[in-house]
Amino acid sequence: MVKSKDELPETVKKVLPEEAQEIYLEAYNASWELYDEEQAGQMSQEAVANRDAWAAVKRDFTKDEESGKWYPAGEVPEETEEEEEGILDKLDDIV
Image (cartoon, rainbow, N blue to C red; front, side, top):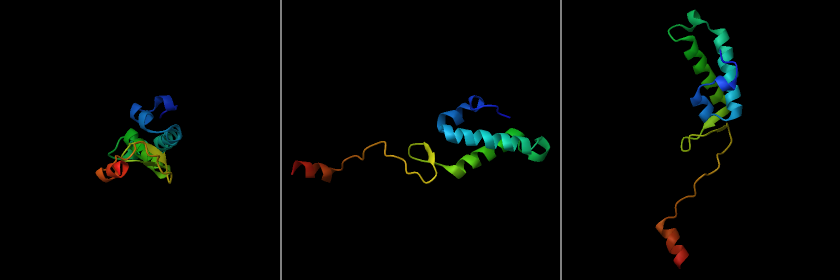
């Protein structure tokens, strides 16, 4: 069981925004309480809780594969880089 966001794994804290960390924490703890080692089967209780927590995050957040950042589902990520000009764009500037 994880008592606060400060106890979350560094990988979770580094990649997820605050709101997604809250979702992860709640889902992890709910899963931890629901499954004991015996009920988890071949997976450890921690592995089951981690799997369930990520599933909960993925219901409400989407990962932008290019930037690796997580956004609320349905939100379009802002462009962080400008598109590189092509040769035709450069020619238009000259003419």
